[in-house]
Length: 116
Image 1 (cartoon, rainbow, N blue to C red):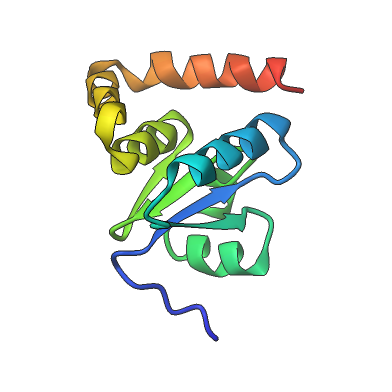
Image 2: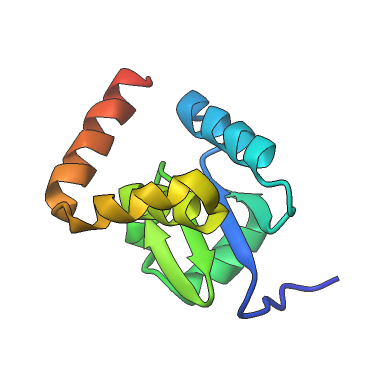
């Protein structure tokens, strides 16, 4: 057992203390019938090892980070990409990619304040 990550692994890193994040993870587990996603707390040693190669330490915080096909998604981009990767009716989330990141991330920031 090591920290070797396959390029095709889909790993969701989340803040285990955030209620909204935890509920989102439960929702993903419920929808993930093919068991394609793996999960790790963002504060774990595993997350530190994997994400330190991909992000600055300052970029990792109390939000969701998604590693898929060796690409890192953060905040609202992570949520959108996770929903797209679930597929099916959730492919409608592809439409959200046309919105500007500032709008989506400011909404996520507002929700994170409400979630506390």
